[in-house]
Image (cartoon, rainbow, N blue to C red):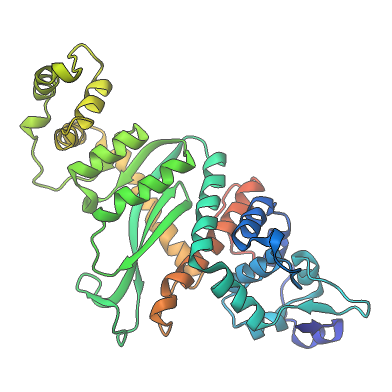
Length: 365
């Protein structure tokens, strides 16, 4: 338990210009009811002893800690009276504030919440964002997380010329909905379907889904189309050719061949593809969808916005500390998830405040 008074604040408060806003002020304007409910359910809060500090306060301190990229000791010294009020920290009679100690916050985050709860909050943030984004553009990509060259658990990736891990992220416009942490040499394609299976439960409203050439797979084409009913825009290789089994003639042939199972060549093309994918012809459906991208004349114009996810990755790493150097192997995924949900929550706060550019975080400290 730490006590901060106005005199102590005057000693340590940094000189901050008038046009800079504390991140605590942004968080104070956000409705944390659904996140707080998720915390209480995970902690079985209704049946435990009374806590000295509310779970939502400890969670907000984790967010501020991640955003300011400081040690907890420096964070406490930098907290102003306005910060304490915005965070909802209890004020004592003598004007001091009771701030949780570093061990309180660490135990709450690492032991009581853990990766399981962070994953639930990540999903919840993605769901809330999906409800507030209309006609969005979905993008799937991975981004490297550089590790120490002495990290015995990290893989050396020859493409990036370093030891690393990966984050596989599903974006909806500028907002990252969900991420999966993996080894540095893991291929992107095996993580595409698991990402989609989580995101589809968020009910996102999308008009396009874009993936790079690393996801060029008939299985991914079929899986994404079947889940989202959108033709995924996947960059084909330079030597890509039209697959004969993916032509309309062959689609009709196989639908007619399986007439005993309910195939009808008079059905719409969507019904035919769904019928084939449900009857063991997923690969053929993927060929048909891939052929459509190859012959599409305006594919490059539709696909060029996929670079937005690269800018989001760069912005995300610049604003938060997505590093695993000098972190124990058992804790790496945990700290990546913590920074990811902190980034999500800050963007979500700006989104719910109807800000034009939710990624404009330069004025916050």
